[in-house]
Length: 405
Ligand SMILES: [Mn+2]
Picture (spheres, rainbow, N blue to C red):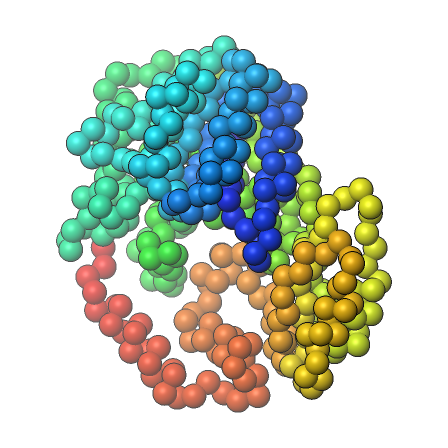
C-alpha cells in the first residue's frame, strides 16, 4: 500500500499581499499527476488546508476541484483530511456528505464523547489501513483543566481514540496510521534542560503520546519536513510551498510511505517543483541603494516562467530619503512581485540566518534569544538594558511557579 502524506497547504494565503492562486494551483496539478504516476492508494492531508477560518470561495473551489481531478486521475484513491489550527473545524466539515461520495473523509473536530468518530477504516485496493484522523485539538475539545495540562489532555484524546480502535483487534496485515496537527518534540518531557516552548499558545507535545501500536504518524503544523524523536515513522511532511523568505533555499516536499502489509517498508520525499522564484537581495547582510538597484537590474528572467517574489535588504546606514521612488523605478516593467524592504544594521547581518529550524531555537535559552533579538531589531552596539532583562526574568520566574506536569 502506498500512502502520500502532505500538510499545510494554506490555500487562500497571500504572499506579501500577492495572490498565490496560480502557484497553489501549480502544486495541486503536480500533485494530481504525482498521485497517478506513483500509484498512490491513500492521500493524507494533515491540516491547515486553508490559511484562514474563512477562506475565499476560490480557495474552497480549488480544494474541491482538486479532489474531483484526483479521483478522475486515480479512481481508486482514498483521501483523509484533518483540520489544522488555521482551519475552521465546522466549516471544513460542511462538504463532508458530498466528499464521502469521492472516498474523501474530512475530520474537523474531536468529540471526547465519541472518540470513534476520528477512526477511519480505509479499504484500498492494496489492503486496509486504520487511520486515527485526529484534527488540531483546541482546549475546548479536550479534557484540559487546571490540574490536567494541554499535553496530558492531548495524550488522553489519542488514547481514547486508539483504545476504541483496538477494541476489535487488528489483523497482522493492516497498518495503524495516526494523524495530528500539533507541535511534537522528541526526548523526555521531564528533561529540565529544554524549556517547553509554546507555539501559537499551545505547548509542544511529547512524541511518546503516539502509541507503540502506530505504524506511521503523519503530522502537520511545522513547515519543514522532519522526523520526530529520531523515529523514522513519525514525520512532518512540511508545507509544499515556501511560506517565508527563510524557506527560499529549502526543498519543499511531500512524503510517500510504503507499507508491506502492516510493516512500513520505506518513506521517501518527492520534491515539489518551485513554481515561482523567491529571491532575497542580497542573500546575506544588507546593501546600499545603488547596489540594490544594480542587483535588481542584473536579475535574469525567463519569459516563460511566472514572476519572482523579491525582497530587498537595505543597509540601515543608507541615507537617501528618496530610496522608495528610486527602487520603484528599478523594479518598473520587470516580472517581479515586490515584497518590501528590510532595513539591516551592519552588525546584525551575520546573525540573520541563526534560526534555520525550530530545534535550534529550542536549544537557546530565553536570555540569549533576547540578546539576539535586541541586537537585530533595536541596537547592535548596546547591551540589552537591565530593565528589559529583569522584565523577561520576571515572566520566566512566574512561568516556573505554575504547576508543571
Ligand atoms: Mn498549523
